[in-house]
Image 1 (cartoon, helix red, strand yellow):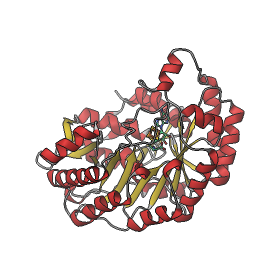
Image 2 (cartoon, helix red, strand yellow):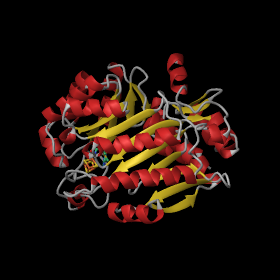
Image 3 (cartoon, helix red, strand yellow):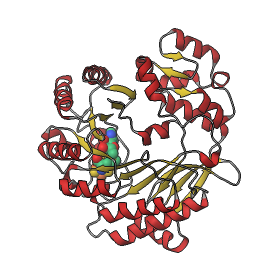
Image 4 (tube, helix red, strand yellow):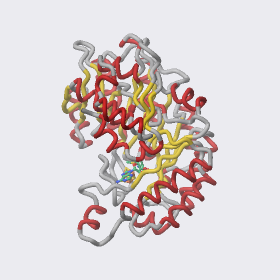
Length: 410
Ligand SMILES: C[S@@+](CC[C@H](N)C(=O)[O-])C[C@H]1O[C@@H](n2cnc3c(N)ncnc32)[C@H](O)[C@@H]1O
Ligand code: SF4
């Protein structure tokens, strides 16, 4: 147990460092997909005529502008992680990744420790050769959206791949990035039984690399799934069934040597996602691309801000050409919101809320901020533990993270 705690702590930004030396992350959004999945309301577009050159140019333009504007163009501030998400980044040309990474290399401090991830879909993971060229450009972690290994579920989700192409893509990716491949799986489909889910998990444990993201299917407004559910055409598993599936997930992943380090994330051999962990720990990140958002500190005022980009790719590219950035607006993060965010995100992770990070980012002690009675009763009730470094949820606490936060936050 102690070993795990120590290894998880390596995810933390190290101690107190001056702002100009603090690590930060970069998220780059590729907004195109080959088709629309029934459940997804991410900022994505199906466009048969993507202007790849203009997109690449715009991404680089915005990156340069934003790095300079937020004072991140310093060799003293290490880049903790770069994440190419989407949409479907595996549809982008390798030159897009190359241009972005070359720009970062020139303007910032990329190192061998910088985690550089991309998301991919089985239908656009074309060959081992392509994956190798992405690795040679600098991508050192790959996240594959499998969602299910069952054909009828993939069809229901509107996925444009088969179980066998997903498996092939996974094995190809594992051969190129051994130990650094994540796969996403979704549970809680219409008609899914505990038995189906257990079967899915058992198969997954035989083929998975060292990282797994297991998401509970959420019904998002504006999706085909939302329409079907609200019209009563399909019914998703009820709460009891969902709880049984959650418990099966904990049991089978743990038997396979996975550590449940965030509500939806599992790693073994310490293959934690540095990018996502940074997000949960309050690390600044720059959001680049259509609809991307970020969390940065204004170097002039020290104020923490959220940034929001124009969502529509054409409008975003147009503004990049005219103004050097597709930034739509910034919103100040109040001290109260900063505190809440650290607790909300922290209670979803095994590490919990790091006391020093909380003090550094908010200027207050976590234990003075939280409701004292609720903290005491949550510790007594076995939902959280307090160590000299952190207030952390137990496995039971993490399962009810939202309720826990509602009790703890005054
Ligand atoms: C937005 S996708 C981008 C990556 C890639 N296009 C793909 O589909 O794998 C990232 C992940 O979000 C998850 N996701 C998206 N919408 C979801 C929903 N409504 N419920 C649960 N998971 C969802 C999926 O598991 C997906 O792999
Ligand atoms: S889940 Fe992935 S592939 Fe499907 S629509 Fe969303 S971003 Fe595109």
